[in-house]
Image (cartoon, rainbow, N blue to C red):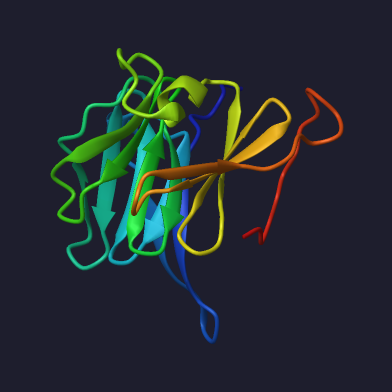
Amino acid sequence: QGSQPRRHDALEVDPARGVTREISFPESRGFPGAFLASGENLFASVTDKIECYCFREGQWRTLPIAVEGAAEFLELPGRRFLATKESLLELAADLRSAEVVASSRRQPAKHELDSLWTSRRTLVAGVNGKLGLIVTNRLWLFNPANGGLTSSPNFPIPGAHYALAGFA
């Protein structure tokens, strides 16, 4: 009785008809840590790379984007972000490149978001195209359109694990 390899699948679902397609992630490409379905594509984070499945073409390809370690995804209206332990990247619309938005290693810091970036943060989507970053017990709101950064008052319990939805 041997152990079975883990399969990583995604489903295309039509709410009116149910499951319409199963998309398997090839084991030869590694083991995905996060997925994002966005527009015509399904993105998968694999250690040190981003894989992309095009629904129209029905095939996987590796994006030419360098990431260190695993990435998590965040989507805001018209924008896709990749967050790693050390950086926040914005994926270009053509999927051929990514711009560094924040990096804990950038010296000198380009803006305050660089100094806030840490592996011990929570990334959340806000309203009005803002990106939320919870660090320790404070919510920071970053506007990618103009680089503006604002913060909320401290949350009441330092070190607690917070999750937010629907903030301005």
